[in-house]
Image (tube, rainbow, N blue to C red):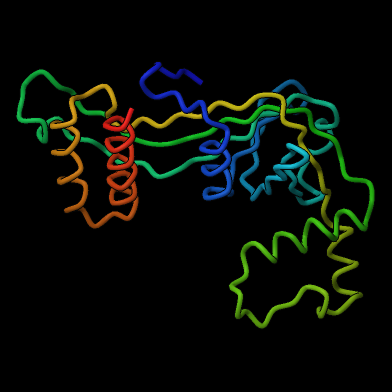
Length: 207
């Protein structure tokens, strides 16, 4: 990923945060020598430094993934930035966003117990605390049949790249103007970008 120095996110904690807050990722690998992608949730295990997920057994991507270097892309909030907000003719349209690219070696999960644990972890992550759904209370025959229809995998992380493009290459005054405009938009993405821009201004002021 191309990352100008203004936008590079170096802190591992910040990268982990983007992954965990935007865990529905795009996983890229080569299938018969051609790029192939699947959209899916990936869970981060910080202690082991791995990503864990699963695909449908009918999805051909897993057949070539074993020991292949793959790329998982996590997309954070994003928003269009209009040059009209700058009140100058020396600006062009752009897009502010956050994203993380994670590279690693994929291997299949062979243990049914480990696969079931990964499914339980997903349920624990995404179900609300007061949800009535419990995976271990579901019909065992149904779950066993379901587990045979998926393939679990883990990705041992070898490299991570984080990017936060939040107008850091502009003056604080101009960034504050952009924040004001973003906050007036109805888009939740725009409001999220505004909050992140405020954080960068605070961090820049303190550094």
